Image (tube, rainbow over all chains, first blue to last red; front, side, top):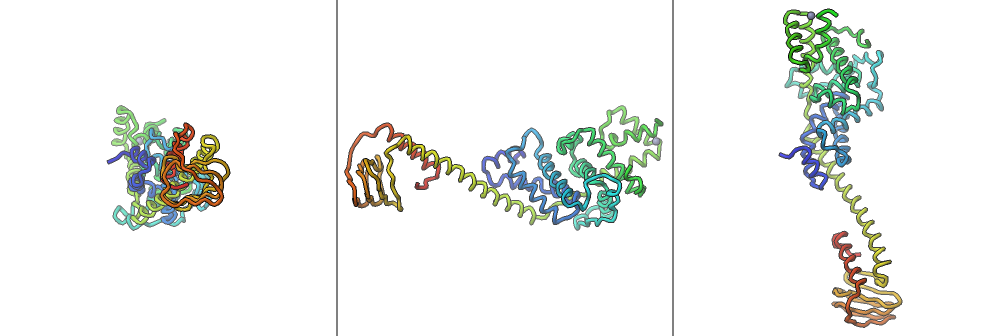
Length: 187
Length: 188
Ligand SMILES: [Zn+2]
């Protein structure tokens, strides 16, 4: 089995199938992040495709010193942020008014039937009340398993900022899920 | 800061496993003895542990679609790259003609046939063979190589000449060989 870096090298040398392996390796990570950020399966599919196309086109700019997974999640994150900014369906801000998006439709995925459905549904719903930039940080941490430093690199933000966002995101989710004190969300 | 407040300020690092061993044991000991703080910790654990369950695998159809798009993109990229190569090669050929082989022949190729229309002396198929017919519309043509088809002269002279090739002609041939390598055997 080739490493990501080897696959990238082979792709750049013109080996057609090497990038296919990259797609197979990272499509779940990319799709899950985008889906949980945007909560729209069709849009998530389109943006997952865009992510891989962008990665493919700028493959020569990828620095092999960093994990490939983080690089492609950076592209996916940027696409999510752009999309949210453009659509304005979900404001990319943490002001109090935008926090009360509790009535947003929660996406129900058939594959979630296999998991603890009730828990997943609750958590998905809870995520919808988080401001997008907190949601992105907490998804990168616990859905994708990135370390604090890696999130800072991916989002090009200081480590301290990431820690603060992560802390707030966790406690907002906790309050929503266990205390249901929605009034306290704005801090 | 009360002990509970201190513990809660450390809960983030505690659940992420970022505390040094000594501090970790302190917090753990407090959580065992304090139900309120323990509840907070359990709730945070609940979130982080269940977040992994939100992973969704995309459909095979999507994976296939992405692969197809990549394949399309790679073809497009190759074409574009080929254009650049061709352009560079064309410029090189023009330079070759202008500076290296000043007496290179203005000619037309139709399949294997060659038509020459120029004034002055020309040397054709230098040391090589021409598979088709040669038509001379104007100028003097010296043939050093072999012509497999017919030779027709409309308003010019054709003569066979066995001559040592000059350094410039050799260079010309050299560049022509490079050219045909670059364009992958395509005829100019
Ligand atoms: Zn306590």
